[in-house]
Image (tube, rainbow, N blue to C red; front, side):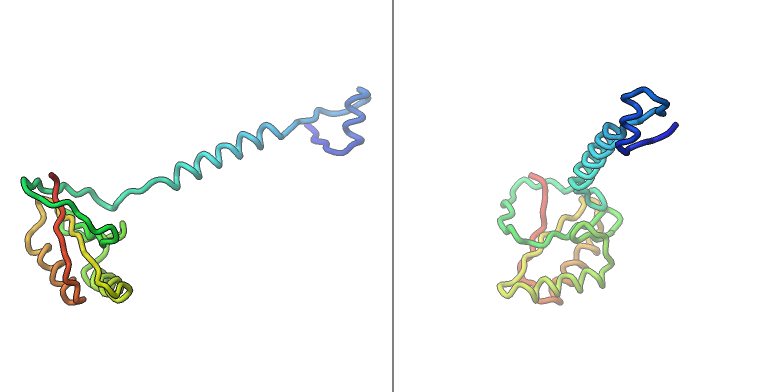
Length: 143
């Protein structure tokens, strides 16, 4: 199979004189381009966290009002997540202190702890926040 894109090959095809088969690649390129766009768009909207947290239910609760609060998740196994990334306690302390330094008014921490999380891990996260001079903390629950 021969591929020709020059004018001489096109003239030979029109005249019928000894020209080989000419394959038009435009539809193939169009389909490939559309598939590429589709996968790029669908891949960019995935927003998953590292693990799932089942919040405990509360009969009385106030809605979380801080829009720019830092959310710290604690899984049932005690893993800590901040900004959709699992971190160790040292890394958490560094990130919380940096957030406190960047916000002169003070930062608010909202803790999303799984209902089966050990109390010890929750206290550890709250202590790390206090070492960074963070005064405002909240514990999120399901209504």
